[in-house]
Each structure stands twice: as C-alpha cells, then as structure tokens.
Length: 195
Image (cartoon, rainbow, N blue to C red):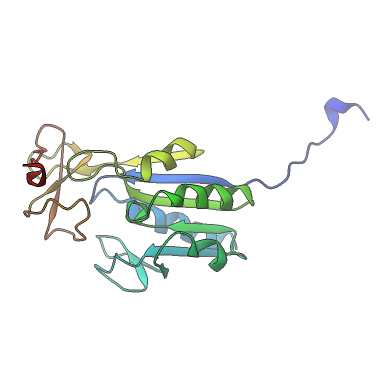
C-alpha cells in the first residue's frame, strides 16, 4: 500500500487545558461545562478542589452563579494521582490554592494520557501572577482567559479588587471580600507588612 494512503494511528495523548481569569469571570462555570460534556461523551471524570476552599460547599465545586459539581477535597496536589487512576478527564478547581508541585502533577497526568482541565486565578488582588498559574499556562496545550464585568464602569474586567483590609495573599472569600475591576479602576493596595 502506498504510504501516503495509509491511515496513521496515534497513541491517545493527554493534554492540559487552563481556564484562568479574575474572580467572577466564570472559570468554575466553564470547568463544570467541560466536565459535563465529557460525561455526555461517556468519559470517566474526576474533579478535585483544595481543602481551603469551603466557601459554598465542602464537597462540591460551586460557581458564583451556583452551578455545582461533586468533587473530591484534597489537602495537596500529591493526593490527586492516587485518587484518579481510572479517570480519563480530571478537573482541578482553584489551582492558585495549590503549591507549585501542581504543575508537575498535571504534567504526569497528561503524560499518562489524561485530559487535565485546571481552573484558577491568574493574578492575585495586587495584579501579580498567582503561582502556580504562570507555570501551568506555560505548559498547557489550550488556554482560555475569561473576563468579568467591572463593577465601576461595566468594561471587561481582568483584575480582582480586594475590598476588605488584609495583606495576606490568600483570603478565601467571594463578594464579601472582592470585586471584579478593569485595568483603569483596579486600585493597588500597598503592602503594609513591608513598612
């Protein structure tokens, strides 16, 4: 048979998809949408969330518009591979709450043929890249940047404004602590811990 007419077959390869943006931009909603589509395609799915995120539910990922999906709570990224050995599609929400080893875990899962979908904030409240998201963005095959709506002017918002006083990088909350803002209306709050 002529080589140009042969049907080429490829080993099923995994990949990493990253959904990033500010708070209130629909990241978890998009993650849930992709997971539900994978289920419709009869793929085995497993979803994880960090233990620190208990805002809306202890055992579900929940979007700000109250869409929910059952998830497994993990204390660190190292727990994920042992809990998803039979899954074809793995969802990980609130990636910014994990440490940088999440990047290696996602690489290992994708290298083993799994589809890994990760959602998280790409910037903290000071508009500084929020680890480990920059590393995940660098290795991902697919990236989706979601935008919210600025509460001041209605423009597309890609920043998260902290509206309560705290200099901690991680302050788990929702509308009680944060607003979506555009570049123009985002106010950088000086870090008082360095003074």
